[in-house]
Length: 474
Image (tube, rainbow, N blue to C red; front, side):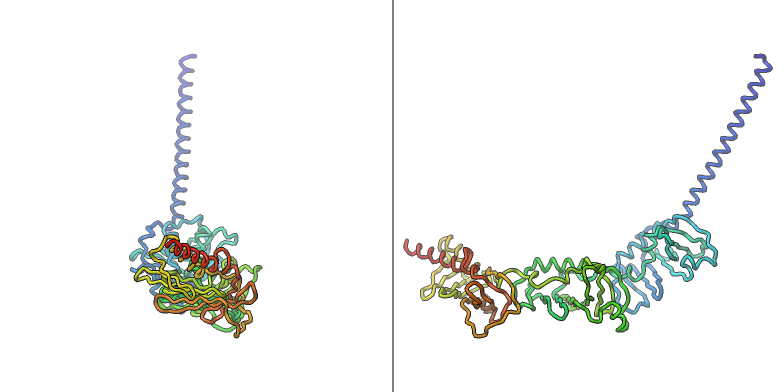
């Protein structure tokens, strides 16, 4: 190649290189500008970025009502409102509002003319404001999109309409149903000391704690021994049930009629150890319903509950009871006098002096304390056959023969001097009606509870045989 041609070739390469470099620089600059635009767009969609824990006040405006909620020494508290009814605040919801607002990010922006704002739900502005000291973070919340993909919001002094995630927007828009504590009962189960359930005018059960903080049944079977574990389980369940929706306040008889609460099917009443009372009426429902309607008598709040949550209204008294007739612990008893047909005996316990005595019918008492371990063990087992006497079935509405004489009598004298008498009146050769202090319990006892392998007659025979053997060896 000639020198002249070589120079021309080199010059062409340089020109191509410069052109390529220029093109690369131009493309890179364009790409940087596009990336910068994307970053700026993303930044413009970041509506707030603050520490949620710094929020000390929240102002909420909903149709007809406003609420100012402040973080006081007692936690989130409503300090100002024009809502005239009682409202137990859902503090978890306020925390959620602060959390959602702290890093609220829009998914996109829309250019909406002033004339079109009403179509996005901004015919009236309902502000939601979080305060960190004197700094305010405010949004206006409009409608959801037709596809329920977005919620539309605006900010003060900003004509842009932002689309945020539908689920976030639904929470931020909230309303009274969100502001109210969602739990059906706001009390702790340990503070409840009285429960009553009525179904169509009849008492399903009525229970109350006594002075010793033990549950006792008031109706329908007074004095029936109760299963504390079952009661505690029921109360734990009902204090965790949540309201599905707070519908309206009952301000006229028609409001009750609309939700079939003018003649409620159930009435659930609770009281606390501090004297508070709550009565909740439930409309009738069927298994095919999706919700059950209820009203709080003290406030007039009408609400609904998912049908799967109201099974507690089917609770019957027997579900809260033990299968015992009357079941004091031996340490609570100073004397027990027993009659079963022709068998009679007494048991005495002097707990102050650690003494126990067995007294056969028409015979001298025998001291059990200090005797053989087997005798002492059988003595306690004999007592348990009486105190653990079980019933076979319930017949609350049975006919009672007032003239019938009991064939079984268990007469307890407690250490505090209280006397309680259990009597069994035979219905036939197999069953007995049971009474406590002359009052019919509704519990039917089968004969084998007395004469079976774990019955009082069997253990009475065991104890007397042991006593005879001890006497023969002396």
